[in-house]
Length: 160
Image (tube, rainbow, N blue to C red; front, side, top):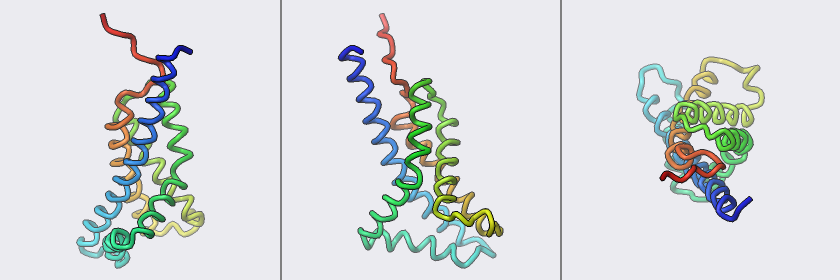
């Protein structure tokens, strides 16, 4: 492996990391925004209000915000790493593919936090999974904007 190739791979890994860290942050903001918007709908579950307000608490109490951020990283890192490596190895640059994976990674992370979700699958849990997956779509788009558009460990051939 030449020096230029090693440099390119290192750059891709740094872009993947930066894309992921920003995508997690934007995804968490999206979760709060979606809950806040849905809490204004008629017949919305009462805890939607709490979910819309609690992000303000997270902003006011930075340690709480960091805890939520790192918890989200813990429950989404493995599946995101697997997809990012597949995207890099096969140079997958499709925005919809990254968005769908973001939704799947977020939903899988929710199931890790809520292991009994299969047993207590009432409509509110389905709503939560849908909201988390929608935020994952947003996070997948953000990741694609930062790192996914240029996915590929192999260096592009120079144009003549």
